Image (cartoon, rainbow, N blue to C red; front, side, top):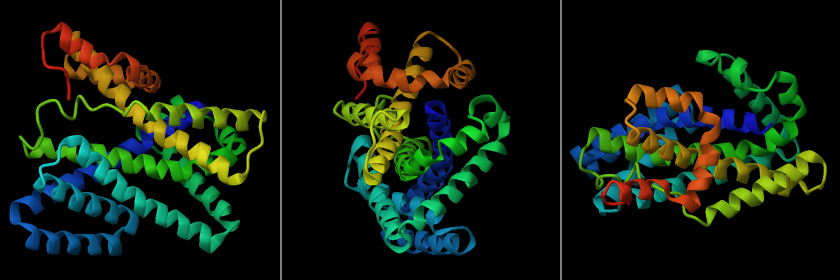
Amino acid sequence: MLSGFLVFGVFVAALAASLAALSALGTRFYLRVGPRRGFATLTLFGVLGTILLDFEFAAAPLLSAFVLAGGVQRGWNFSKNLWAIFLALAVVTTLRWAIVFWNLGDDAFAMLRERLLEVVEALRNAPGQLWEMNAPSAEEFLRASYWWISALPGYNYARDFFLAFFAPALLEAIRPGTWQKGEAAGWRVPWYLVWLFLACGFGLLAGVSGWKTFPRAAEIAFASGFAVSGAFFLLQGTLVAWALLGRLGFPRWAGILGLLLFWRTLPVLGLADVWLDTRARLAQKAGEKPPL
């Protein structure tokens, strides 16, 4: 089951990366043409995207682009922009889920089950045989659906977090000099969030094993909290692994291959880095300035 949580996390990160690309492009356009034209043009694209596609997929890049552009104009650093974008997106996500539960009540869980099966079907059709290689069977998904449904709000927050990281990182790629060197690659999860991950993980395991029965609200909090805090350490583990592979002299293609082969270990690596601070140690040994 935990492996399935991680598969969903990778799937959500890939989705967020595509939305972040739109956000970065929108931010660059906004900063180039100015607030008046930028706001009007991006709002028009947001409306068209809502009509042609879906409000969720149009609103997230639009909102993150506005927040990111405002942060750049105010001189905020990479980390401050990341958390500002995440907070703005999380507020919208919270309101969306509050409306769902307020309007549907108990029927919300039936709707969530249908949404879960849609995601399962998307994984089945994903390139690279992701489902066959890494995901649990459909039967296992159905048996665990009670907890999967509880985690779906958390995966929305995880998407918000990945989008909040990728958007400013991609902006640096298309607008060099936006951040100080090493800000994105050296980003770290605040140390105290490790306790959120451990507490939610313990509650999730206790509930899944049947050792403890929790109220429904607590189950949603544990499962969703584990999903979003796991996203923090999945990203941090990826950054640490990339730094290690680069320090060992691996070419980029080999580094990407290594991440794909050993992706299951990335959250553990990210969790350990809370105490080890691997990138700072690597920089110290090389006589470089530690990552910001």
